[in-house]
Amino acid sequence: MMRNRRDFLRNLGLSAAALPFVAGLPSLQAAEAAARRQRLIIVFSPNGTLPPYFWQDEPGPLEELKAILQPLAGFKERMLMLKGLSNQIRGDGDSHQRGISCLLTGIELLPGNIQGGSHTPAGWANGISIDQEIRNFLQNNPDTRTRFGSLEFGVAVPDRADNWTRMVYAGANKPLAPIDDPYQMLNKLYGQRKDQATLASLLDDVREDLRKVSSRISAEDRQRLKDHLELVRAMESGLKRSGEEEELAHPEPKLDPNIELVNDNTPEVSRMQIDLLVNSLANDMCRVATLQYMRSVGQTRMRWLDVQEGHHQLSHEPDKNKEAQEKLLRINKWFAGEVAYLARKLDNLPEPGAEGSMLDHTTIVWTNELGKGSSHTHNNIPFLLLGGGAGFRMGLSHDYGGQPHNRLLMSLAHSFGHHVKSFGNKKHSRGEPLKLA
Image (cartoon, rainbow, N blue to C red; front, top):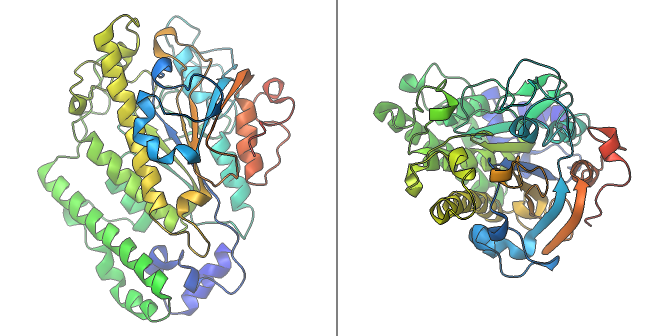
């Protein structure tokens, strides 16, 4: 489909620069029937959760959400809480290293020289992550192939290439770094410019092409294109202004992890990244995306929440430290609010060429490398699913009593029609995937 769609659009006399703006419009797709746009977004936040403020008390229909999840209350009927899933991967590396690098791969770390905690040193993960497995499956089908296949977004991820900072793997020993600079992501999506100071308007380059297209598309697609162009224009203006004021520059990327800081503009960067993520999905640039906040063992100091201490430091405070618990509650609730913003953006956009909203055709998975930060446990890893893309039965809370999380990874693949018999460590993939439909 992707090759035919590109040929079709070029036959209209459009330049290559215009393709990112119009390739996803149903009115301009080639004559063959388009496959359903099923999508997956995996969101990561670090250092564990606060179980009493996250998990529902009993399995069954989702009741009133606990404090961390209150920002998501409006999506309760479209959420699925999966308790009792454990990362059972053992071997080299500390709990944080195995927590993030085995989270989506479900397989051991290779031997290496990255020393963590008091555990043995380790290298990268020994297998592909589930997002890339699904990406490759979709890219191998011409009806579901997209320009990028997947996009990896980051927010305040330090420029440190180690197994505390990577959760996405193209294969064994092949970590993929997220892009945490909105300007770089804008360049990736719409074409390289020399630098922020000389950023020429992308829209000026394609104005004539877009004028020609506007007369050949439906009213719905004209509105969709208008919204798309307005977002890119706003992003350009915001990035130019930020470049002049140097507001978006993160501190030196190779700070010692014990004193790692992130500028107070992180909330602004987060919203920019989410806007770009949704825009790329809406225009069918990819159908798989990841959004990684910070890193495992991250010491981000969230001053915008009036939290001066490092996140990882707080996560190790005992439960009886009420001040630390209240600050951790603020931190985790902020992450939930960003997931809610992502869900609302998707829900406010009609699904191109189909009924419902984009959220109805997208599965968001919000997860973490630890069940509880202070104990470094890999039991009860937080897995919260949101949206209708996978066809799972929503509005429920399940407790799987310690089942390997590999079974969930298999379920995600199966929901896309990719019926893998195992994923990651085969010992932990035995049996059927989780039955969530």
